[in-house]
Image (cartoon, rainbow over all chains, first blue to last red; front, side, top):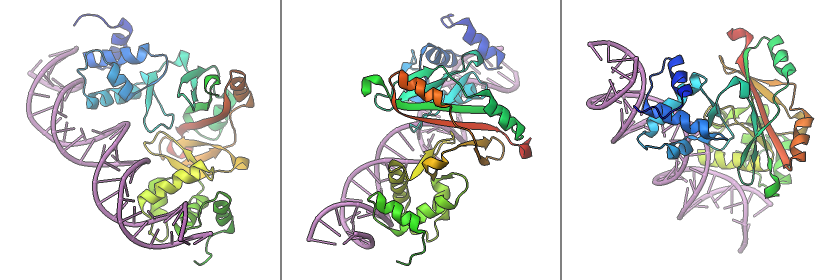
Length: 139
Length: 139
DNA sequence: CTGTATGCAAAACCTTTGCATTGTT
DNA sequence: AACAATGCAAAGGTTTTGCATACAG
């Protein structure tokens, strides 16, 4: 196979014990090149060779999510969205309730909150936080 | 119809221009008596007279949500959950990733965050924030 | 060669819609 | 009487599963 996908993605797969396949590299490429999280259907329609089945796409997304390669997001739209997962660039979003545009926001859940939950006995604490509002163009 | 439902709920329906029906009062009762948000299926199975159709239940939940009588929550489970909505008792949750128990948490998104979005041009700002972790019993 | 990944078809699951009927006001 | 609410049946949209085949390591 020609090396037309970033080395990063190949390594990411290897590091997680996943076999290197065209489908997987394409999915990672599509998600990696998007600046906002994509739905399965959007990913599907952006796959260059159109040789991937929906079932395979969902299996792939599930695995990637389990391996923390991608992050599954939920904006209560009736389906999920997927974005690259990286600790360093962890961020949240505002979704315009008018035009549905999705933008990153520069703030995260205060650390005290999760500390407080730790004190309550919780471990492995994760969070989700998203904002919704009418953007300036839609007002 | 016998008055076996709280006056509050009857009023809530009236205030929103919704007709008083057994289905609606039962749904409000079920949601009102639960200390954690319920899925449509859970609500359905708790309805006392079992005389409500799923279609009606969903229509009812949609209306209640639109009228801000109930709040639709999404914990990325593949379905929604519904809880009573009241401004004064607005709160968020921790969901145990083991036993799926849902508890309220006593903190909310910092006000500065939404102010910052307002400055960015957003209006009518809402937020979602939920926590996930292993609770002490599941560790 | 071994086990994983894939495609295809079918099903599962949650939710919505159309329409004729019933119930509330 | 007028209009909203309901039940039933069917469909829609997203995601999962079973199974035989193809592919990566």
